[in-house]
Length: 49
Image 1 (cartoon, helix red, strand yellow):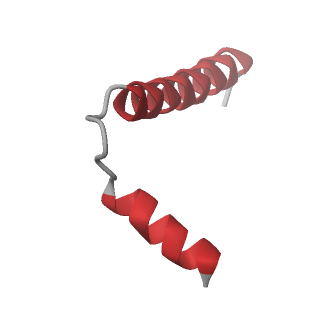
Image 2 (cartoon, rainbow, N blue to C red):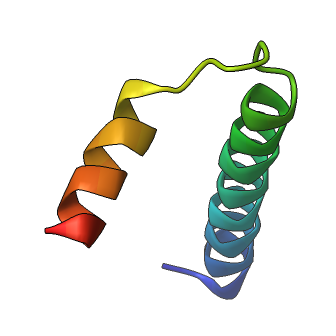
């Protein structure tokens, strides 16, 4: 890979990480009151195990 391709790949990975984190943040902040996602229930079971 050339230097230009490496830079593009790094920025692509960085933008995907930002996209995923911002979507998770938006989903968790806008969820209805008292609602719990399956992954949260699963994580609580694993942590309390």
